[in-house]
Image (cartoon, rainbow, N blue to C red; front, side):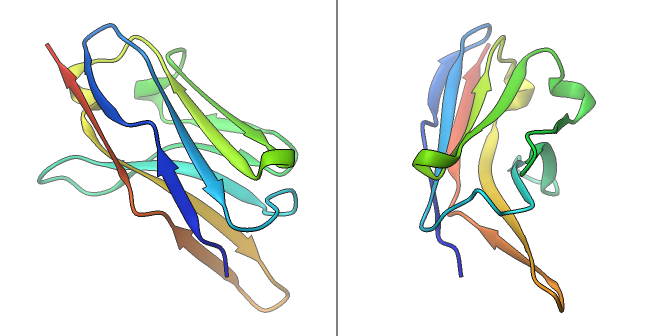
Length: 119
């Protein structure tokens, strides 16, 4: 079991920046995928970015060149640096961990942190 706690959300003007943090309750060095998802009001949750245990990152097209995902295994923490924020980035952002076991994959989620971008 992995508990995830996000922080760093808030209110920012368009064009501004925020850095989200996700602290895990145990070592993340062997967790196959860590990622950030978001859910805007009335919309489905969508993948924003993922990073593998080998530090390979992937992004949804709408955030490429603006967001950067990184991980610090020593601190059991994953970050999402968000730059050039737009009003359409407004959402609750959730941290996700995908843990692989010999029998199956497990998904763990944080409680979410609100990001609001004003125009």
